[in-house]
Image 1 (cartoon, rainbow, N blue to C red):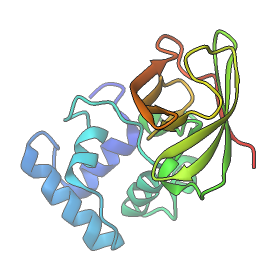
Image 2 (cartoon, rainbow, N blue to C red):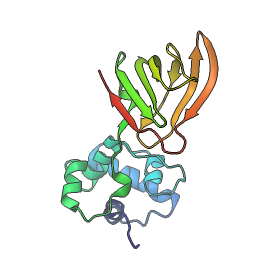
Image 3 (spheres, rainbow, N blue to C red):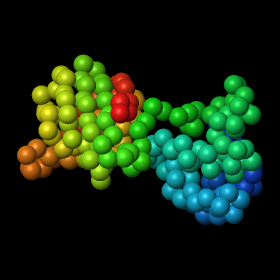
Length: 186
């Protein structure tokens, strides 16, 4: 394949399959488990190979397991081994906060155009309380937001906005350019 992702090419070569049939991903998942003692789900692998249409950026831990399967210590080491000219585009990490890994009390700053800034505190169970808001009339200080992903370049998607005990429904913004910055501030 022209311009094929080098990491995916090496995975195909290592497992000895073209990764064109659904059953190939079962075999690959087991091969990864056998070699690394780590589980990568069939659906995760299908996404990586474009077998599933939903576009999800792989987690860093997923990239590390793939690298180990290919004989490298971790993802960073594999990237260095491949060199600058290798196409590793789907494996390029993004500025992302893994919400499920946050500790309660972690403060986060989220910004997007035009001039929207939210200061949030994680309160557990994918929920954040809004401490401060700049430029938004829809999300207010004190709102509780249910958020599963915060990633630069992706939309700001809130599954539920809870205001004074009332569920106001979902909220979505930054639809065209995505989030401009996502950072942990304390």
